[in-house]
Image (tube, rainbow, N blue to C red; front, top):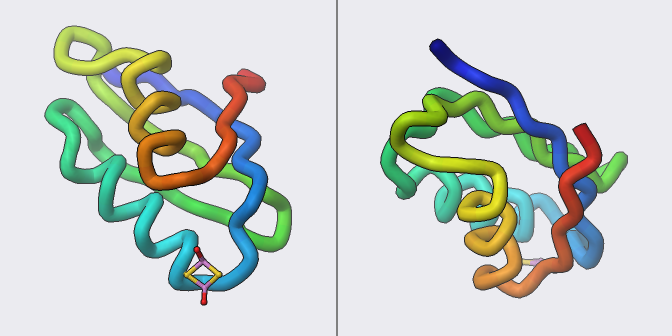
Length: 72
Ligand code: 9UX
């Protein structure tokens, strides 16, 4: 079944930043939804743990150029 992860993402300063994070995360296998909140520096991701995990999602956000920490 699906799982939810909440990340703190620092360095996003405009909505295009959020767009690139969303696009990169959604390109991973096993992602159901990704909601990026620039104002609160959060990324909430719904995913299927048999395909992808929190650390892979976190590293993907970092590869786009932002610091990401799993908070929930
Ligand atoms: Mo907006 Mo983000 O001009 O890396 S895309 S600051």
